[in-house]
Length: 238
Image 1 (tube, helix red, strand yellow):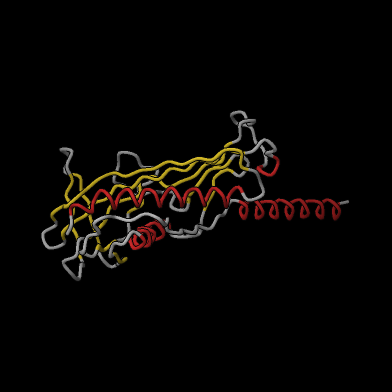
Image 2 (image 1 turned 120 degrees about the vertical axis):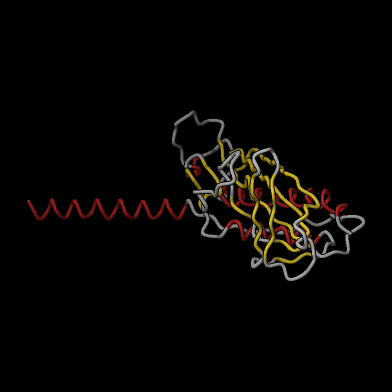
């Protein structure tokens, strides 16, 4: 009997571990950015824009402190928090360059250039750029928001439901917000600054690829945000 009890206990532990690993795999998503075509900036500035790695300030409203949930990218009813093994700041920064180039701008990603933003306490900030190898304007800043959500109209608060059983279709929502600074590295003069954001949504989305469709919506929203930023800062450079 003692052996049978031990065998049953080990079986339960193994089952629990298997379910945990399965849930973790279901909660992991891979990002994949594709530039949005059919958009151009006129006139396109001749100056090259050097993009640094943006700081991750998500889930830290009204603060310049770093995000303590760096791998979180979304939320889903039934899946819970959604994670990605990818480096989100590097991913978003590279996406900036890809979309800018698609718009006809000269842009490159240089993670060796460092940008430090300090709050002066009077509503103003000071930006300091280090490591720039040229006089080209440097684009830096932070990711304020970059996430997607999966919701279902038939689920009440605190109710758990598998996303694979959502017969009525799910609602996807995505939000992106970037706080950007375009800086002259020669004297740290801020040429342009702004908070650019976009939100997107889709209804009646069905399994089995809800997570993938959520990521797709998120990346489309990111592309629209980047396009908006380019149109705003382009007049500030030649």
